[in-house]
Amino acid sequence: MLYQKSWARAWLGLGLVWFLAAIALAPSNKVYQQGLVLFLWLPTLLLAWSARDVLAQAWKRQPALWTSVLLLLAWSGVSLVWSPAEDPGREIKRLLYILVFLLAFPLLAQAGLTRIRQLLQLGSALLAIAALVSVINFYGLQEMPWRLRLAGIGEISHPILGAYVIASAVLFLLYQPPRQRGTQLAWLAALACLGAFVILSQSRGAILALVITVVIAPLWFRDRHSRVFSILAVFATGLALSTVYDLIAERGSSYRPEIFHAVLDMIAEHPWTGLGLGAGYHVNAAGQQFEHTHNMFTHAAVEMGLPGMLLWVAVWLFALAEILRARATLLGKLLLGFWVYSTLAMQFDAASLTGTPRAEWFISWLPVGLAMLLPWGRAENGACGKISGST
Image (cartoon, rainbow, N blue to C red; front, top):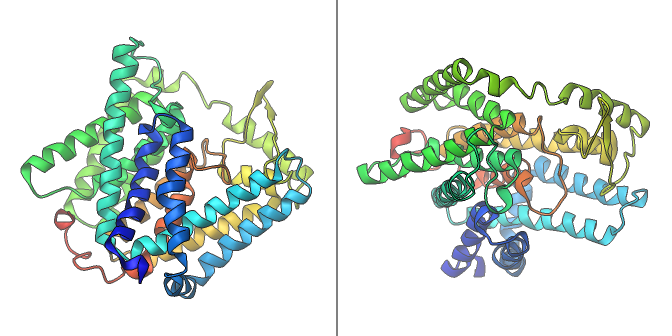
């Protein structure tokens, strides 16, 4: 079969790494999007016919998850009927991007979940380089004061969304320590670069989501490494609160309660239909105007009504169900932490569910896609062993 060829697997693997790392390292967003077309969309479409049995198995093994995804995309498309979106064709194209992105994961799974974990590690390592370059560029070359929030390179320039991307890389690396001493030093250096980026971004939502995930991770990892990381996270949080509390608290609640109450009124105006996919809107709260709801679930409700929000909730919960079924595997454990982190992160700022691939996809469609890998690896060799043997 064509999809089983080594070059086909390498092509798709490059696409996954490109998705992860080029969001920061690509010279522009246009190049990032073009790379996704070349390295991920194109091979998925070219290999889909030869891999039709794999895609059929994906449907049979995860019918609830795939059904909820297709219903969400269909409802999103239907909402264009009443949407004031200027270019409905562009919105349809974005929905197709999501579908092709998700179809790539059953094909990726054929390379084995060990290979997938290695690709996640590689993408995260490249993001660590991007984090280091960002810090040097912002505070060194641009000579910005250390109290100023870090703006990264590429598409991680937004302090909040950039922190969400980099914190995802922390989770992909943290629980896969290598055995070799030299490689361990590189692993620690990468984590230091990633951690510094998240802290210097001063994104309290990303930091809180990451800390909570690391603190509770021993509940499912059940090993010494995760307990050590949990204790260190508690210690670091306490140290930060005692030393830089004023810096942490100076922005207050960032109007999040006021925004939430205003958004509830907006949802009540169009509870069943929403404004329609791609409809531009602003949130007026506390005498200010905000560009979005700062919450993935309420954003879905504003755009696509309560049916759209409930369908997204269904997608998210069915993805969790698949992850829980694979919790005995190492990738299943990693994804459970990633799902918890993403759930927390999308409460604070993310509000782009159906846009072109961007930072928000790291905490929305990427967890869903990775959950679609799991039926092919629940019997992963050595997954029930110690984390230290996971390289």
